[in-house]
Amino acid sequence: TSTIDRCLLVANLFNDPWEQRFWRLTKYYLHEYGSSTENSTPPVPLLPSFDLLVDFKTFEQIHLERTIRRDIKSSTSSSLTYCIDSYIALKQTDRAIQLLLDSDPNDDTYALNCIKACLISTMQKQTTETSKNTVTKLVATNLIANGKVDEGVQLLCTIDLCAEACRY
Image (cartoon, rainbow, N blue to C red; front, side, top):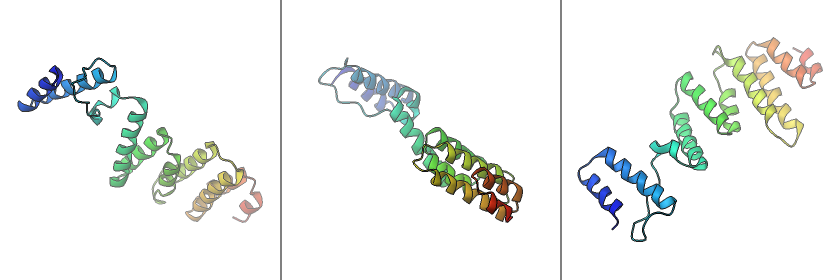
């Protein structure tokens, strides 16, 4: 075994968390940049607590997993807002739109969430104009059904459905 492996073993034997983290990190980077010896065992991947030291793809994957776990457990509006913001930052816009549209109609931010979902949907690169308009029409209909008639009518007018808007 290599010197790093022995140091890591001693740190594990003495149950010293700082030393364990230090030697794991050292072993990982020496192995990554080609300075480790042949008789050294390959390092385990870095722990999620080292998220600032990993490459971009791994960092993105760690944060997506965290967001999904938080999304599953979310029960408060602040937790839900965090999930929506994270999904948008991680370019998981479909899930962000779904969470925005599923917000409680009695919530003060309902209209804002619906309009935000429209904006995100419109900003996505989509092949057809109809898919963008579908989300906007759905949001407008939901707003009208929940008593926000002015906002719903304005959205319908923005996608050239003025005749339908006049019905409301």
